[in-house]
Structure formats: structure tokens, C-alpha cells
Amino acid sequence: MFIEYLEEILENEKKAMGEYRFNCPFCGEEKAKFYVQSDEPFLWHCKHCDQSGNPIKFIMKYNSVGFDEAKEILKDFGYDVDNISSSNFDNSFSSELTDSEKMILAIKHRHDSKSDAESDSAIELNPINPPYNVKLLPHNMNNPEALPYLDYLHKRGITDDEIYRYNIGYTPLSSVTTKEGKNVMIHTSIVFFTFDDSGRMIYWNTRSIDKNAFIKSFNAPAGKDEYSKDTSIFNLNNAKKTGSIIITEGVFNAITVGISGVATFGKQVTEHQINLLKDVYEENNDTKFVVFLDNDAYEQKERLGKELSNFSDNVYIVSNPYKEKDANDIGRKEAQRLVSEARKYSYKNSLLAMFGV
Image 1 (cartoon, rainbow, N blue to C red):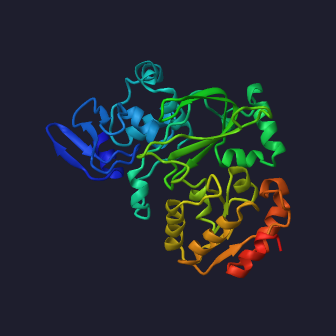
Image 2 (image 1 turned 135 degrees about the vertical axis):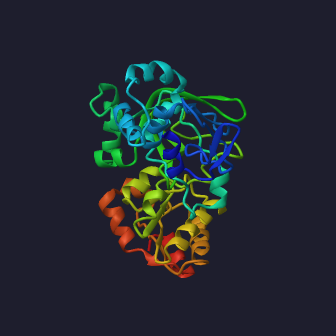
Image 3 (image 1 turned 30 degrees about the vertical axis):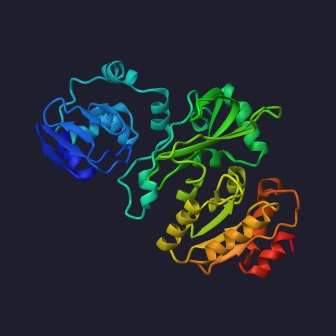
């Protein structure tokens, strides 16, 4: 039955008063806040993230599959789905999803249980929902509305394969309320998502395609218990698998240098972000770290190189002779050449890199 399926995939099983409890696979809490009825209709509800539904809805969300495939999965566990239709499901449950929940469902990969390698600080933080009215470009490649955004990305050197790889989104118009209660309008913007190791979207930031936009870039506002630009690193989940981490400031720079590129959302690399990089080293001591911050980040390059060299002897500094150009300005081929010629970190080489030597 459905409970047997949950017992196979979820952790921290408990049973009391006609209910089963597990760790929630959607929000990642670890105190068994995910409640499931022990008998039909096996309705479930997480008291941490407040998501709820029936077995079909769970299978669809957990496995990122459609209604028919979810039915087949449940049939394998002896769940009677013969009287359930997709129209009944849609009428009963689709209205429960907010725009943000639909967006998260669309962009999330299969969310397996958290790995042991995930840091304690990451476990304590909650993901930030995307702004409303965000659409995924991979789902809208032939939509005329998406053409200006695709054109903008192509002109910045981003390929269609990369649009799919990074699940890049867009929004013609949206708004976000900051923690101080200020309403910020987001116009004609690309939306980049940051994922954790399990494929869960945890953070987002934007870039307007309008040359005259009042707000060119916007980093999602975060509370103390949420992921932020200081506690997230774009594409770290993919780059860590390549054996090389190329550290840049912005998302466009990270994509330009290739799948090993990551973005720290600015020149100041925080202690939390350095600890995330240290976690990567502890998983793979052979990981190569390459510092490719912008040329005006002199002090930050030196500090980052020094911090990384405290735990790794495989740290390199890129020397960029193009004074006022970052990796994306330089272009993919030349940026990747500079990465290949990066010098091993030392105080002397750090000084030389400051002057593009």
C-alpha cells in the first residue's frame, strides 16, 4: 500500500494514534513533521511546510511525474487507483497549489533524502519561494512571449543547452515584498535559480533585459532562517561533481566559464560560502579551486585565495589582462583560456593577478 512506499523512501518513521510520521521530503525538516493517515485515503500533511494532499499528489510531486505515471507507481504497491481520474485529481487538488508551489514543482528535480555531506548550517535554512508569475524558458522555447529573453541570453553567449541545464526562468512583471515590507517591482527579467545537492530550489536572483531598467539585478530578500545571497552559491551542486570549482561573482560569468563555474553573488565571499567550498574539498580532496573575481576585487581575491589555501593546496588565481571586463565580457573561449593559465595561489601571484600580469 501507500504506506509501504513511504517506508521505503522516507526516514525517521514513527507511528501513533492512527498516523504515521516521517521526515518531510519536500521541505527537508528532520523531526518527523510529515503526517500520513494509517488508513484510506492516506491523506498527508507536513506541519512544517504546510504542504498536503493524497497519494497521487505525493507521487507526482516527489517524482516530478504526470498523473498517469504516478498511478502506475502506486499500482506496483497495491494501491487501488482504478476509480481515480486525472480530471478528478485536477479539480480536487490543483487549486491547493499556489503559484509559487507550482513553480517549485516545475523546476525541482527528484528530491531524495538529504545527504550526510550536507552541512548543518544548510539543514537549518529554508528555501525561498520564487516570485509569482515566473515561467521556465525550457517550457516556453516556442512561446513568442519568451523570444526577447531568449534573444538576450543568446547575445550574452548563453546556449539553449545551458538554458535547459540551469532551468533558467523569466518574468514579464512580478513583485517581491522585502522583509522590511517594501514592495519591489521586477520587470522583464531573467530569473536564475540556485539548487542544493538534492535538486531542491533554494534561492533565486534576477537580471533585467531592459537597458533602462530602474533595477538591473535583484537578489531575493531573505529572513534569518532562509537561504540568502550570503549563504548560497549558484551552480555549486553541479560544479562540485566536475573536480574543479571556478569562483566568479555573477551568474553570467559562472555560466561563461563552463559547468565548473559558480557564482557568489558579489565580490564579498562570506564565511558561510567559504565553508560550503570547504565541504566540497572534504568530499573530494583533489578538487581544484580557481579564483576568477572581477579585476576591481583586489582585496577580495587575495582574501579568498588565502582562505581557500588554509584547507587546500590546490588553489589558483586567474590573471585577467582585460582591465574593465569580466568573464562574460571577455567571451567564453578567452575566459576559459585564462582559467587554463591560472597560476597556483601565492601572495606574489595574487599581487601579479591584481595587475593582469
